[in-house]
Image 1 (cartoon, one colour):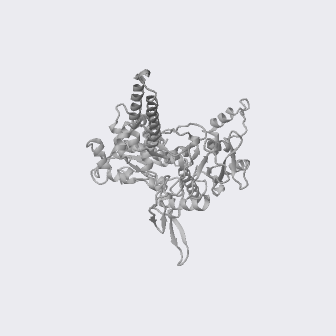
Image 2 (cartoon, rainbow, N blue to C red):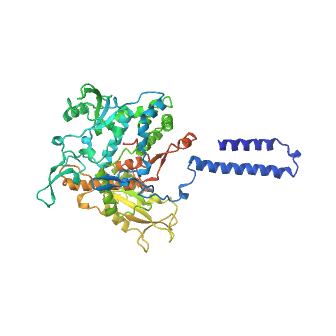
Image 3 (cartoon, rainbow, N blue to C red):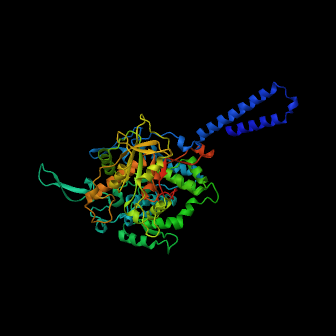
Length: 572
């Protein structure tokens, strides 16, 4: 508004000066007129600058932006959570700093639905479990952390979009293929222990039957998602029945997901149930739900606004979401809403052991700014990433088309470091090195690559600009995880015992937390990790700014080393 006023004032002043005949202007009037014009132009410049600051327009070149100062630990005080004989620090319970999570919005959800929908009925305590989205994650249990967690987020998107309680169903021990009843291994609590003799140590005598199984052993499923609903129709449907029904939902043959009505054991209430595993969630998202979620044929969209409310939006945020028409803005806004809701919270024992791992095995200072690089190699190099590796060496003229040979079967670490090149140089003696945490499944080779790079007298790694001058210095941090245990959660029940599996689980979750909370993240979207991390680096912009033309969602700085520069929807 201020910018418009200044522009109009300037236009009127120019018009008045133009229409004034030169012969009628005395020599003393021209300087005064020019002075007024100069003041108007100065006002225009000041207004443009203030407009940029207030409405968050990105007019500042990346090369001139200063380094941010974000640390792993939340600078705001967090409430410790008691658990058994431990105290849980919430800084280690998710991929977002605790002060950025606002679950209190859900306590007002019914009133918000009434406000935005003009009295349309939300769910109440009696009808909360009438419509259930039954998520059966066991089918994806052999996938990595990124794949399983993205699948969980995608299922939550569908459940909230269709206004259904999301209930997780895991197989009973007799049907669970994992020795510890979970693909995420066994913390001490998973065992039932007994003292054989008085004063002696407790011995493991069997599994704790009441301990969470499957995905529930990793994720603390939010009550606002489940609505505290139990598994439906337990009197008439067992796990194998639901598994059969899940398999009947084949997106190729059944374009619209089948629903099943069944009677609950409380003697009368019925539930309408859709059951899906990880693959069905992906298939039906593409074929059935995706277009509906971004449909804005008549914006603002009331169904979209109601969906936003179910994700924790305030009424004014829901109205803005209902008016978004660009699909990227829609997906980013959903990601930011889900992140703020605290949708991905890890169980207390995960938080406890992840904190121990981060503090004792990473060597990363938690109260100073740091950046992070994720380098995924391993099995990705012979599958998804192979074409990108070939393309990289082709661009450098170092790929032999006839023999299909190239200098390295991967994209070198120096290419990841080059993503910092357009940041302001910080090479002075008084400048501290950039602290960079490296998460990778190929640490030995990457450390060898780093050893070949130039160093200063203190051992910091140096990189140069286009003029050959030292521009950046880096101090790299790696975890001290036992490489003999492997880096991925595992592809079968025979890969180590459940304690080893749990150790890999904790190491991976710790890396994800560190990556998500870094200042600058360098990675790629070919990896599930890169896409998952991005979802938790997004925040909604101020609603007033959005209404005045600012972008709807802000993203903490990310540099994509190679491959697609834009990810798909959250959870994809």
